[in-house]
Length: 191
Image (cartoon, rainbow, N blue to C red; front, side, top):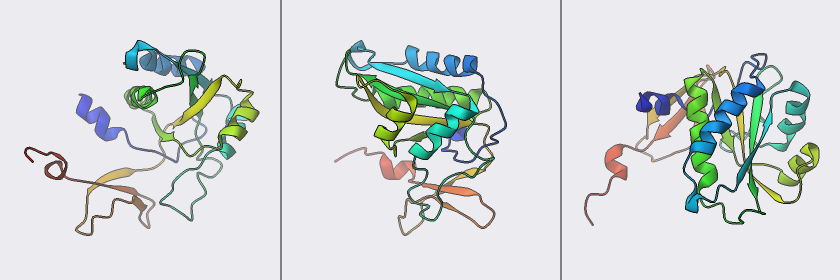
């Protein structure tokens, strides 16, 4: 059921790094993105896939991991992603990517959950560094990176507390808690 996939689709940041994801699995996830909606049907996105350890090791230091967890520099060796999909905008097709990268990232992540994987959309990217280490041509804009793997952490959705603090946090057991506003708070029936 779609709702179950959405609930299980959390931002996972710690993985079983030794769980391999094949190029074919990544291509299947990118195919979901290809079939997703695109503003004006321009289809300006391209997808760089990485599943080999050496290449993953070059991508990892180009990424920021969790803004609200200020003392956490990201997953340690052994908990890093098994694969990445870098979402690129092709300026030779269009320079306005609208919301396409968000739509395709969600499609990829829902497909990952269906495969028993998890991931995290990362927008905190040292883009120039990433372009350099991967040899990405100048015609592309780096839009998002999706980190993928078999989740090594538990992520729980929580009701937003009375203080209204939306920042995610980890408890002493390492469980990642994500506060969510209630449905009644976000639905506007009348002005």
